[in-house]
Length: 195
Length: 195
DNA sequence: GAATGTTTAGACCGATCGGTCTACCCTGTC
DNA sequence: GACAGGGTAGACCGATCGGTCTAAACATTC
Image (tube, rainbow over all chains, first blue to last red; front, side):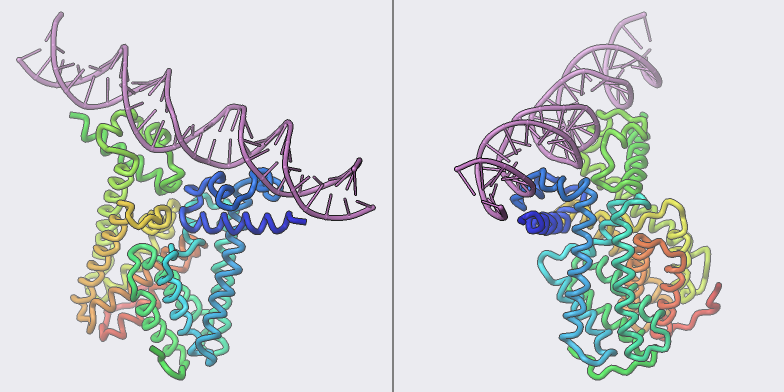
C-alpha cells in the first residue's frame, strides 16, 4: 500500500517546486525527478498537471493556516494581542530564506483565466484566513469584527506583496504598527505592545 | 523609418499579452502574431524575451503612474483629498474588465530568482509610486510623510492583491475607509469625504 | 513459489518553447 | 531604374512542454 505515500511525496515535491519556480516554470519532469516518482504514478493519481497544482495548493492552504494559528497562539493568549501577533508570525515568514510571496496570490496571477480551478482554492484560502482573523477580532471584542478582519487582511496581503517585491526587512513591523491603529480603533485594548 | 514604430507596436502587444496570460504563458510566437511583427524585428530590437519583458514592464510603469496621477489630480485639488482620491482611481482600475492585478507583483511572483532583471523594474516602480504618495502626504502636511506613504502603500498593494484573487467590488472602498484613518491620524484634515 | 497489482524507468508522442537564419519584399533615395 | 536597408514570412534548430504507453522490477498475499 505504497500508493498513498507516493502521492504525498509527489505533492510535497510539486509544492516546493511551485513555490520556488512558479506554476508554469516548474515542469512535470523536474517535479517527478526531484520527487523520485515515476510519471505514471502522477497520472494514476491525478488527471493532469492542474490536478497536481490543486493538490499542492490545498496542502499549502492547510499547512499555512495551521502554521499561522500555531504561531499566533504560541505568542499571545489575549485575543487582542493575538491579532497583533499575526504580524509577528508574518515577520518570521517574510524573513525565512525561502519566502517568495503568497502562493495563492501568485496562483491568481499566473492563471488569469477566471474559471481556472486554482483560483477557487485561492479564494477559499483567503476566505478561511479572513474567517480566522474575524474570529480573533470577535473574541477581542471588536465593535465590527468583519470590518476589522477585512482591514487586517488588507495589511496582511499588502505586506506579503511588498515583501515579495522588495523583500524589505521591516515591512511586517510597519504593518503591525498600522494594525495597532485599526485594533485600537475598534475599542480593543491589548495587554503589552511587545517588541 | 518604421523601425521605432514597429518596436512600439511590439512592446504594446507584449504588454497586453503579459497582462492577459502572464510572462511565462505568453509565448513569443503569439505575441508576434498578435502584433503583426516578424520575429527578426524582435531580435533586432531586443537581445531576448527578457529584454522584451523589461521594455513592456517599463512601459507599464510609465503609463500606470501617469494614469494614476492624472486620475488623482482630476478628482481633487486639496492634497489631503488627493491622498484619498488615490483609492477612487484604484476602484476604477479594479472595476475595469481587463484588470488582473499589479503586473509588477505578478512579475516578482513569476521570477522568484532574486537576480532577474524584471525584479529591478518592479522594485523601481514601487519606489516611484511610494515617492509620489509621499509627496502628496508631505504637501498635505502629514506629521510623518514617509510613514503615511508606507502605510498607504500597504493598503494599495493589499487591495490590488485581494482584488486579483477574489475580485470583490468594494475592496477599494474598504481600503479608502482604512486610508482615512491613517490620513486623519497624521493630523491631516481633508475637505469632503466624497462618495 | 505462484499470482496480483503497484511502481519503476524510459521510450515515445505531437506541440510549443525561445532563438537563428535565409530569402524575398517593400519603400525611400538618388 | 538601380540601389540599399529594414521589414517580411517562414523554415529550421535543439530543448522542453504535458501526456501516453510498454515492459521490467518490485512487494504482497495466498
